[in-house]
Image (cartoon, rainbow, N blue to C red; front, side):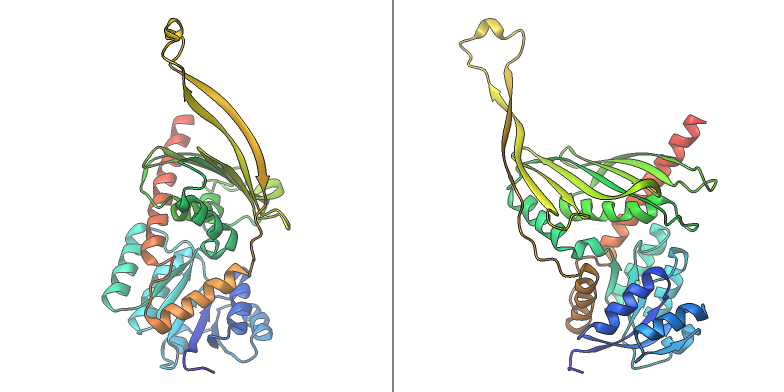
Length: 344
């Protein structure tokens, strides 16, 4: 182990926790010391992925180990606040899966405690560590796409149907975090509708619309009931457009030199002023498929966590970022509930 290696405990080794277990066990910057889960079957599977780690069903075993400097939490969202607060009170840094908490009040308390005690609180918004998402962020910030007009996100598949949160908090949190990272500006208004077909009160299909400061629109479609797995975002700028397809093996990003330009009509044509002062010019140019190296985003995320713990740095998806995502999700949930009442 190097001087920068941190000792970590994983809490929760279910569906997503198993992925974290594998990545943590393989990380050169981390020694996975404990795996904690109340399910014996989950612990057995995790032990095969990380035979070097001790296993336990008791969280106190993790909290009482002074050699553990950080805890990774991959449990249902309802338990995030209690588990993270207990870990931070024990002086341990925390990486908690998305969303940060089930309410913004819980999330704010977590952020305040971490800041007061100099602890790293990071949220597992994995797509912020996706090379394609980062490439697009640079393209937006550089102005290469021009002024951003809107983004349309589709995240669809058949299952996994969850019982603790609806599809907006599950799948939609990915796209809300991506748009927040790309646009980096406040959300001024939201609207949302959702439908429950399998479980009363838990939407399996949702459509959300967000308006960001500067008249940038974001639209999100998420579903657990779609026949095809889709992970696609279209970004429309005034100069160029792009399509990000996370399911594509060889064309993950396509940049299109297309658009509609607004041109002024010569003032000498005064007799046409009653129709319009402008003309709209459709432009269609080349399509560019940039090459982007693609390391596993979860591995990049884990290495970022280890670095921030070792150096006292702030991660891209820190607690405050995760808190803003939760606040946006709360606003969308309220809008969805209001639209459901109106429809009824």
